[in-house]
Image 1 (cartoon, rainbow, N blue to C red):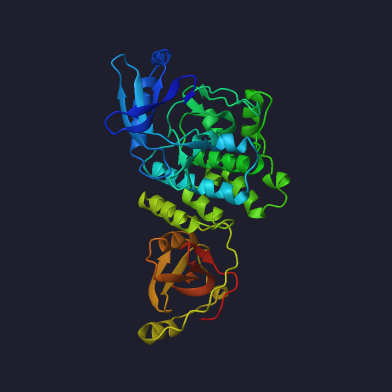
Image 2: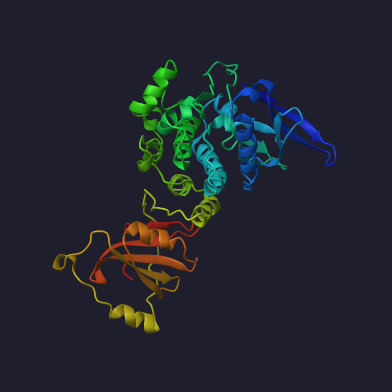
Length: 404
């Protein structure tokens, strides 16, 4: 089915189950490479732990009597996105949908500490499902790979490189990946930005005549602005890709949940359920999620006035003018309301980002959050109101506030 510098993938048949499978194994000469067998087996075992539907299932891994390691994977029919984009750029909604599907698998992988390190369209397989539907499957989580052949159309050479144990495809490697073998999930965020760029333009954001020129561009030059190639695309697309491709990992999205909630701003279709799954996975791993980049204007009906004791407490709640007191610019009081407009909780946070992160942990009945400046433990000026958007359950800030 496929062959690289170090390995081969063949189609086989499981004798007992009478089902086709794919088997990947290392070539004999690769056994002489230091640590390659242990790495192959260890990371195949990690990949087998990823249960998300958007990850290719690894069913078994073992070593033959002659020392050659192999892994058994589910057999898929379809084409990888590299083959598809070679025929031309994809519509924006398709590209975003594919990246969101891949992000589901990456969320689970990252939650387990697995970094892919070689995300690219060739490793995103658009598999056919029974009935004709398609699903994106992510290949080879963090599994060492090698040089692949030039495409028949000669569009660009797909070179897998290893530099001091740093594996990856140069055009998709983050700056820190070129300089160190120690990378985290933000290297995959960079690669997703390159993938999205290529899917919608058919080109790469960084190019060079040779590896040295390409590495120099990645390390020192800004990416080609996607809107210069797609002038009709929403400006948010340029912001999203630009944030993925920040040279400093600290300036990128911290996790795929933050990327996904911004992608939802430009394409919603089936993304609500995908976003909920990604956010849940990231939060269960203990990561925080910052507010979305694009607030947007959304139609929200005023909540009904609170009744009973909650209304009485709200009516007597002190509200102080920010100009009359000294306060921390970040400290806030968050007041949460349910669908009936009843106040359900009031909490103090060190920042808006902390309050937003807490809001994700609340049940679906909590739909509104008002954030006030905090002055000596009491309310100051209303800073922003967040509401939970119906389908996505995404908390978004109101641009035009309605009186309660």
